[in-house]
Image (cartoon, rainbow over all chains, first blue to last red; front, side):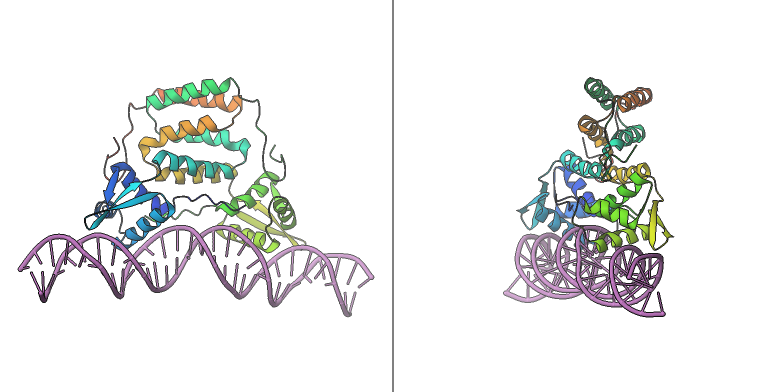
Length: 142
Length: 142
DNA sequence: TTGCAAAATCTACAAATGTAAACTATAATC
DNA sequence: GATTATAGTTTACATTTGTAGATTTTGCAA
């Protein structure tokens, strides 16, 4: 029952976002950006960078005296992975409601909404009338 | 930058699901259900139960020699909280795409899809043409 | 009433995570 | 070349999480 996919932790996400948004960034750049919004010490950030490299989310390449980091995993992929992990905890029966809530409260462009619209119309064609509960006390959710 | 909302952890979710799906359950019932799908020892499960009570996700009430647990937080609420937490890590600009992927790969009933359809139609009326990136290197995502 | 099986509580312990100080190496400066 | 400012590396340490053994209680059967 242990989950073994390496995931980005809360603190690490902040570091990753800098790299993703800049494409590549030196240690200094990353530190400066993070410190503009937090009180993390330099060494804290360096520790996180090292852990992210070890976990395989970042690569570092020496450029003069500094390291330049680059993401090895695209933001969208990381997010999808985390989302899958989250939904894996939930009773399948409830995924729909959860998604409805999420869509409701998430700010999205007209474009994204239109795409969603299309995806849904397509899905509707083969959607089941009901999705069974997959909780342990089998099918116990009414 | 520390996240302080008490969240349900991976192992704990499995315990919560039993309680949610049964409404209320004795220690024994919970243990039996979990052991039908994992090799967790009794004491492991009891530890998790205790932690969940301490965190405020469960209440326990003595019934004879056993405890009967009941959820203090509805499943949907717990899930929404976790989902919010997850999305909080992501660049706002990317939420739409993430939701599209999620809707795409999630099995849902025709009914849920219809609700989604409605929600989207409604949202479309006031949706923006674009959502700005909210990453630290401000607006750095193109 | 006594002994026991079952339940509960306490203690433990490694790995992961958040956070950072201390130390070392090195490029740039005087 | 000696000094300093930076960058990188090592070590640290409390808390949380996953996992469970050891110990204590206690309802119930003999």
